[in-house]
Length: 265
Image 1 (cartoon, rainbow, N blue to C red):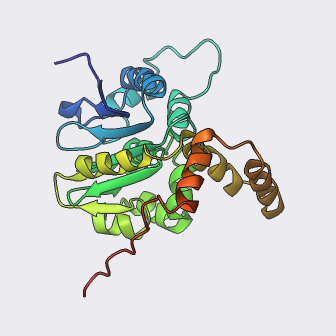
Image 2 (cartoon, rainbow, N blue to C red; image 1 turned 135 degrees about the vertical axis):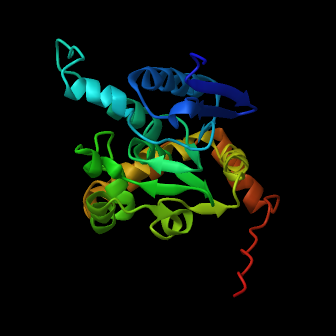
């Protein structure tokens, strides 16, 4: 067994992070959270895009229930001072950090695994993926930011159904409910995520930052405040890279947009 609970590799401008507790279905404990925090911060120093995936047969089965039981049975010494939930902190560092993240999902994406996945900005699933929130059946409640992130993605009724009944969603159902934007054949989620990450890495960093940080904040405020924030953003000084992109288009040097191929019934 390895102590490397989160693997890290750099492929060009892409940092690839892998949850690495396959014997525990990549269940999240505090040791994994600590390593995930360190890996994400390293990615911000070294990369322009990040990719999250899981080793083994599952992306992540959620909370390590053995650790949860120890806390519920008062076998874990609580912190002397109250502090922010470690999952909230780390998942926020992903969701509102300095680079976009793409999650490659397969197998079980359950509970805290779904909370982690929804911290990413884009999600790809292969056909083996399934999604669930089994906390109610374990006598607990979501605690990794799911009340905010998952509910904003799927809406209250879908999340309530998943929690109250224990319903599992297939990859196709996950696409329908907007959990994922892409569904690919089994075994191809990571390759597709890397393809998307490579495309994202060609955008100016400043633009990616606004998409991942400004856009969600505008979604949180009123209509008038959102337009005001957009106005402020549009009047900030543009990067030299942005000016060059605009010049390429005006001078006819930019690659043309190609309409998507229509799907046949």
